[in-house]
Length: 311
Image (cartoon, rainbow, N blue to C red; front, top):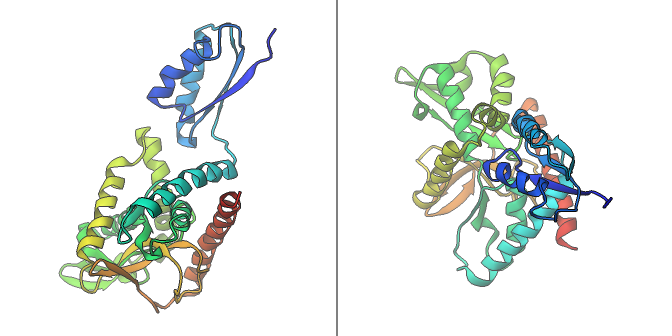
């Protein structure tokens, strides 16, 4: 008997994969004499869906299908390697064809490191023209504080997302303000629950994307699209006086002790389509630890990605 081949399908819980898997397993792709081991890869919240797909494939009683393996395990280096190839190509295309005034916003994950690779692959375009999206996290943080205080989200300003657009990000409200009954006050005074602000609030924002996927069985597309609009609108029109937002930008010259060759989310003010980091905010020991932890993850991602970039 011919030796089985292993076929990995990513996004295996999706609609396209649902139709594709049957065709692969019955021999339409690799031939009617080629046994198949199918590996179905998707994100953790989709594993229950994959279990259903596995059952259906088994119930098809396909003679070529030797085994079906559902999994959420993938080597992070493999993901980074694939993304480096994509964003190296896109950066090179920007370098060759785009105006040097182009504004580049990277959304695809890992957004910070993808943005860094795109920028490094477009050396003729100013580094400050590249940014990555952390506005979705920023909006999530503002919304959580607003709901906690019983006000609308426009009554909350100056929350900060520090670091990586990942589960290590640090949503910080030490400098945020909330307007309650017409009076503006520090977020900590408005919320009146330090344990929540240092615990569940942070983890809720960090894990919100996974929570949406678990509930919808789809990613957070509506809120992400709105965040992209917010991000680009603020680049175009500027931020309001006395307010700042969160963006992943080059860390060069920052006053917060963050390694410089990173795309890191900072508090940002924008005027005349030029962003400026909000420097000199006091940082307590709690925040320092969170900021350094997400920076360490970004350094590891960067070093791995740069190894692939040089190959």
